Length: 524
Image (tube, rainbow, N blue to C red):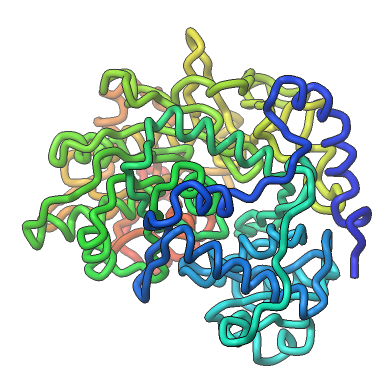
């Protein structure tokens, strides 16, 4: 088994270098933190969590966490031991996460959607010996069944409790690992402490204007940074319930949203758009009062529709697993201001444009910033001193931040850089365009060319000339015009976080109808 020094050593050293400053400022704490126990002590009878199969008050959740913590201890899990937590969006998974934190284990959080192969890879890289996988049958089959000692929390619920656990770990010690999506490479382990995550959560609450009267509706994976902030921290911090949706289905998910009377959604814009379509189809009033939408490219049509047709306040937020909710619009700002950009740096967050290698790169630092990657793998290119290099292109005007797109999502045509997000924002405003995504295609003449995948409304026709004319009218220069338009007959592919899988679009476009620029037609 990997020792904490091996797995989290670089993160411990980074935390140590920042600890005096952040403790003195009150951002980090040397005291243990158990947000569920605090909520249960103050508001025991309030609803804490609900899924399709049941619900718990904060007192009931606290009791369930105690039972699960006892089972982990009985199985041999000790303080600082890494525990693989394979979780979905259900009550059992939330209990497992809090139980691991209560016994001061190091939680390695993995979504069920990652699949067995990725879980096996994480186990080998972390050398964890223990695992918890509520409602995930794959843990009992194949290589996984023998790779870890799997703690069965289902059986623990029927067994007598042998230990009452109490956290003794300082809140600012590294203790929590999230894994990046791993769509183009092996996922990195992003190391946080409870202090970094509670600071991010506090900023989230303040900017979003959340209160204990809200009900949080969670579609994003519980193992994502969005899920962790909303369900693991913000819900007990506010004593507000979180509603967990484990299996996306437009009709069933909409039913759960309506039945739960959820007031808050934070997650992908496209999934929310499909939920609203379902609500309209059944003539139902949507209970949501406000939403946070994040990502390097938001569909402006969706953003405007949410406010125009449903009266829901839309705020844009920017962050990542490494630097959660770093900038945001504010709930009290006017619609024009909230929709124009990605907001301002939140409390105690610093933002600048320009790194040692990329003059337009957005860099962030502050007490919410992660403490490094597991084993320090990838730390050197990720940091400029204490500044985290986001990999995003940004502009800052009068303190307001606008994310232009990912550096790696820049198409370089004849040496000129084309941000895909900028093109998408213009294309989606064309009448009849329901969804779109711009992406790179290898080109023997120009190095790369720009293609755009589009899903159109029924009975809509669109030519490449229509698209280029619209982009020129929107002020884009000629070198940013697409040379390939590919027509899709269904929704564009999304990953578990609701983002378009841009790197698969070229491969998946084969055989689909398309139109090409004249130079490409002549070459065929």
